[in-house]
Amino acid sequence: DSGVTQTPKHLITATGQRVTLRCSPRSGDLSVYWYQQSLDQGLQFLIQYYNGEERAKGNILERFSAQQFPDLHSELNLSSLELGDSALYFCASSAPGLAGSETQYFGPGTRLLVL
Amino acid sequence: QKEVEQDPGPLSVPEGAIVSLNCTYSNSAFQYFMWYRQYSRKGPELLMYTYSSGNKEDGRFTAQVDKSSKYISLFIRDSQPSDSATYLCAMVNNNDMRFGAGTRLTVKP
Image (cartoon, rainbow over all chains, first blue to last red; front, side, top):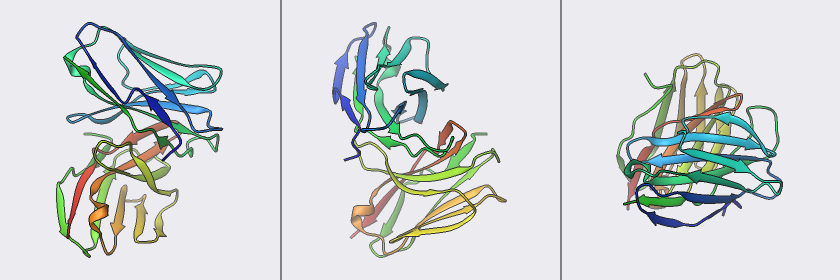
């Protein structure tokens, strides 16, 4: 158990809908990362937050947004869902360290199925 | 060309075999290198973390980094069926982290 929790574990929804995925980082970790993992794309970095502020952006679509709250939990919002958004969404967290050296610990993921 | 190349396999070996997993990369700015293990339907878990060129050993696992060749490896000695998983390499430059596609390994009893 990495100490990172994600809810829900599974989510089934329809195209055009909006969903919110939630992540609680490990105690003491200030950074939260979101990843999408699909069979054909592998693990894709979406976005990183550090202590409430956006720090880095990856291949995140405009239909997707995220935020990190004062208690450090984070939410990933996916809107206007398409069939291709079906994937595993992982959250990871890391402790403060030398820039670039933070080790990321992954949550169990949320499996999203868009029908 | 992808920044990080990793053969997706699948790789199947008998129990007790030595397994070699590899990644190559193109960006010489990568400074930190990691190997993650991901069991089916689970999140990746950190196995090894290295910074400099050379070898780092942890039990049956050895991580090797060759920065001059932009090549990293993970060796698993005395492989066990419980090692069956997907292994992802990852590397970091500042806050930019890139993953390989993952190699699916099966260790047969």
